[in-house]
Picture 1 (cartoon, one colour):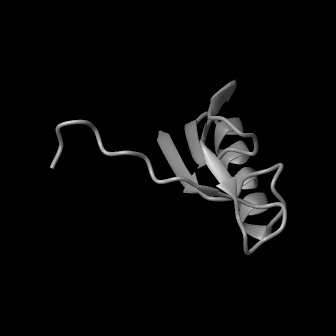
Picture 2: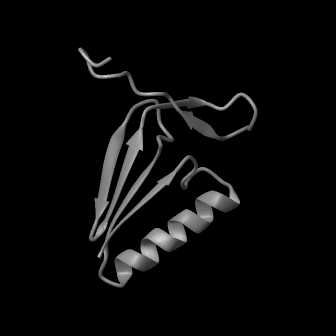
Length: 83
């Protein structure tokens, strides 16, 4: 089965939602499913991590002004020529 999780926080960010998303993703990957996690980047740039059946795509983000140690996703630009 192919599973995708879209989450704002994901470790190393610390929150209950981040921990739950990580545990779900890792357990499903350990059970043989192909798992994709899309989350805010914990760095200043986007990057991808692949470990076995688990792929984590980190999208560009900025510091969350309302929560210390948390990041929020930037809205992606619309493709050129789209209306």
